[in-house]
Image (cartoon, rainbow, N blue to C red):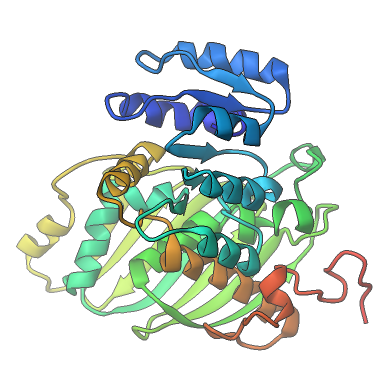
Length: 366
């Protein structure tokens, strides 16, 4: 485990404990020895996980421990470097979002993967609750009718104290604002449910916080299946909610939650005249499993055993990052953006701000 902060202690350790029969933590890396000591004590409180060795140097840990899987929970600016180091050492990687800060960094990570593994995967836990699995199956089978209209909402609230942490709110350190660091989970889930996007138009603004990045963004999105969607990402919203709503020909499916969901957070509303038996099927998934790191880790361990690409990696993960880059480009240029528009020579390929005047550090407005 690289990084010993709240996301690792609060989510990764529980996932590891749930899979203690298959995986054993051996080492933790942090630049602060005091945090390492406290983290080792925290690990010991989880039955079945056993002791971990503390390291302050990632390369030294990789050389000595030779782990099969590396979990990365450090600030985003370190993700690319640490992921590449782990892959070079032969370890699979499961990294907190975002996996990296740009499409250029993602492509470098992809180039370092090898057929059959190791692969690098990004945390996308909202895909893995039973409610999501059920809704996606219904949508793909056409049981709700054709999707027509969708709304994706990540409206959260963050204080000035939140942004007092040095790496937050900076392009070079975080990669972007709520579009990149907060809404990316819901945006990813929207793409997971509706499939490929084909056009995006957007606006961003910095309305309250004294940061480099935006603190709110809005977008209009067209999907390959014909559906159109609105997307809102905000850290200015006192009434915090994460929501996805998809209106199909036969029903509206809606997920409302904040940081995680169960089956109870999904609602299916039929159009008039739909047979009650169909509605009962929509509303009763076979399992009730919360969205969690635990569920995604199960898929990663299965992929490792089979030597296949894990969930949350490769072209599927790149689609979400390209969507994010396209949202920024559409907002900063005032023009619609389509998949494939951001090639290696495009400034939005190497940085989400795309050197846009007034947004890129060091480049004043025109």
